[in-house]
Length: 231
Image: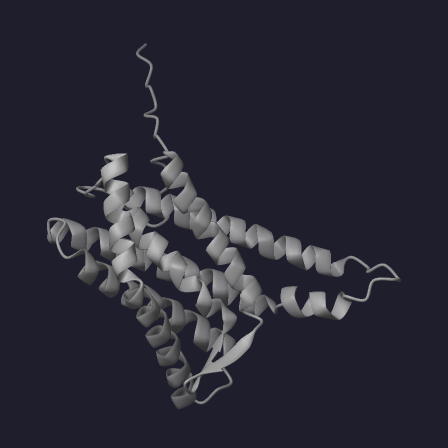
């Protein structure tokens, strides 16, 4: 009987660095989210400082290595983020030592309602996949041209999906008008962030393509976000 040999995927050090950075951005966003600040009339959480970087990395992963590896990284980020959140909640339940005075500060940083956690994780999973799928399909349809347009349009779609899920679940008590302003503010700030840093993103992507010898076009692949059997 002929043996079926499973194809082995290669993961370069550069890919692993990008994937790890992606996960770090997600987990850091959870920590920074407890800080609320105002900027030019917008009320935002500290997560906006680093969360858009995850979309920039997502664009780079999809552009260089293709949707399949980007999808794998997204699920890795989701699961490790979930692990971090669950571990934080477990540590919260542990009784503090009598001499320790940091209980309240620790709770401020790490505590969150179950609704907030689920909204955040679900919004990320949907938004990140939407970003990667659009980036991948536009690359194929444009024959690899117009990276800037792909990066911006895919980020707008991803950030919009993220906000459409997260804001209504978290702030269901707000009037529709206020909720819309909050969603629009988050999308505008995050996408503007990515546009400002786009020249650096383009240089990094170009350099990695040259060094890695990778520039994947996703012809004939499945865009099912739950299909991880390729690995």
